[in-house]
Image (cartoon, rainbow, N blue to C red; front, side, top):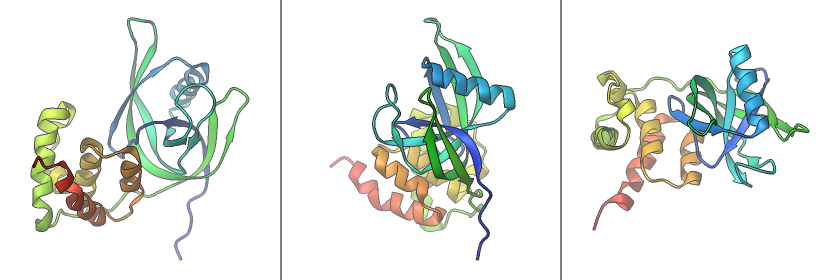
Length: 200
């Protein structure tokens, strides 16, 4: 029986999109509750949890977040021309929120169990097409990944997460890919849905 990780508390940021481990997130912050979140994370060097919104919206009343999300760590921030705070965050480990509560200011805080990183598994030869498709997608859609080392393309977890964020999946499909614990199963499911995106 695998021992559960201890629960840690962190602020949660429900979004209408999914953040994957290693992925990049750019946000414009204007609500006071999220300005407080950024201050807390930068002051203590901690991350915040990004969860897909299951019900509700990114602004206004607190939304209902998915239980499984990804820890985001702020890597850069700046002021936009309109005065809003812009941040860049990078996806770290995944987590499952055991409990969550909404503070008086509307910020959601969760007690989360952090998942271990997936094992590094080589991409089997039957998924070589996925590596080629990912290279093309990065060339046209994700220039920030162009400098990725060649070794990344032989890491089943990295290839699966990058395809899941770049292919035109809907948010629920992306959430499913995030929740899978087997990188080879993720590649198999991505391969099986590829025909949807091929032009007739």
